[in-house]
Amino acid sequence: MALSKFLDPKNDIAFRRIFGTEKNKDILIHFLNDILSFTGKNAIQDIEFLSTIQDPDIASKKQSIVDVLCRDSTGVQWIIEMVRPESLRSYCLKGEEFIQKETERILKLIKPDV
Image (cartoon, rainbow, N blue to C red):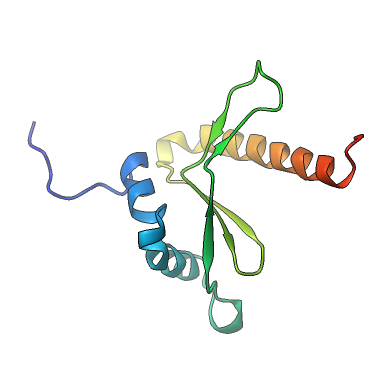
């Protein structure tokens, strides 16, 4: 098996290496603005990288790991995942689970007794 001299960005590890590092922050900003058609005042100007590992609230549940999790200069969090078409169904389920966990975490910050 011959090794390619280039990384395949459809591979999770390569995708994280390309888009998930401070060194390549400008590439991610450009990628998001292009893919989302953000221009002018709507364009993302800056990104802060956050931990991609989301610990479970209950020890018996598993951790969630996303490819890239970041926050832009307006405070909006972006979850960036490389998904191949054949795994789209499992990705949608993973996205729903992550959104549910984040919503629960934020509600606990607002109302700790919830």
